[in-house]
Length: 173
Image (cartoon, rainbow, N blue to C red; front, side, top):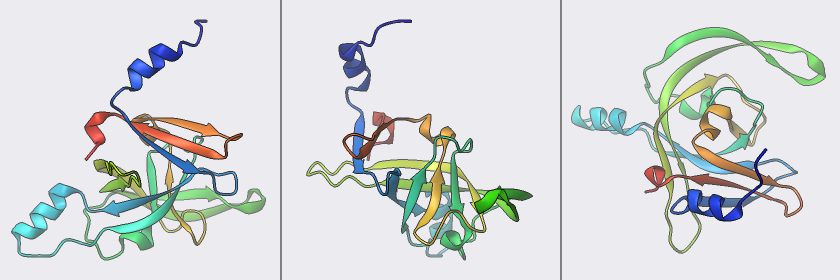
């Protein structure tokens, strides 16, 4: 097994966008903006229709969640997105019981806002999302999983009480 080389890591991450956020009750929760994918918005505008407005929501980063992004249905209600892969699913609930629900997929775009003076945001457009009847609780409306985390470097820093997501240049706007 090779030794950790800080200089090598710094070269690999040069030019990347790093977002650092505090932990919320020891969980990695991040605010993001969900918006229609640009191609969908462009098509609506071409038809003389107004695209849906972007919505700020909280998302939980869950490294055990094997999908990329799950969003609560109420967030996207009335958007008119093209859905696919409608399925019945069983989701774990408290006390080990399973809850039967429905899930389907649709493309969305997500934006992570940067609060720094430089103001570079991160946009992933489009990204397939699994739409569920419910996600977590009243505050968290999305779950970010392994497929989405493959586009970033995710660091959970318990001793400092924060986490970071670092994205390549291609996602910076």
